[in-house]
Length: 249
Ligand code: NAD
Image (tube, rainbow, N blue to C red):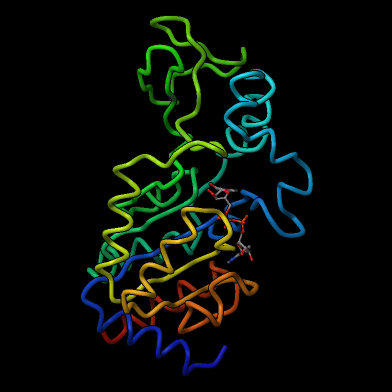
């Protein structure tokens, strides 16, 4: 990456009226949570069909066993990394209005970001499939699967968006509005292949925002929606970018 590209990206963020970040699984890789795609990706080990809503309805125990193995057992030990913290610094300095994340791991909030739109929900909450009550995950025992609602005995589902499930209306509306209003966007660690989430950067691009992208490899956006491509690990590139924004900001 040239210094010119980094400076250009930093200037774009400094000059922006409204800048937000759009993040994917890649930002949490350095925290120890693998992405879905790519050589180390979860899809090389697990069948994506098992993350379908219909599969969960029919086989909640099997689905839960996978979810615990992939997310819940890891997340106890996972902490925000330098990339998450750099986004929190940009927000604290008034340079970032929000993070729209496809991730379900809660690491942006742990790092200190206060406006986080969780496009695919969060493992930090559960919802009863029967009475629809929501619960914080903390306090729900995962030793007998599937966990059951303490009120009605219904099966609890993680409050995440499974394949073939709709995106919560309010989150979709707020993320789309933000994408229309923004004049700068930082896209981090996402293939852009999961829809409709993947459309958010395109909406920003079509509405005139400058798109800065950080990724270890080219994505659906690179050279198409992306204006400034910073190739490298998020844990290295985002702190460098935040430092360049804040040193003269
Ligand atoms: P993905 O798995 O499709 O792709 C990961 C992307 O991250 C790739 O573009 C890859 O090149 C990039 N990447 C990998 N390591 C990186 C690093 N260190 N720095 C920067 N970039 C890096 O992820 P996706 O596009 O977010 O879509 C997958 C879906 O799966 C999303 O809906 C997401 O919610 C979900 N998911 C979430 C988590 C999590 O919450 N941490 C983990 C796996 C999958």
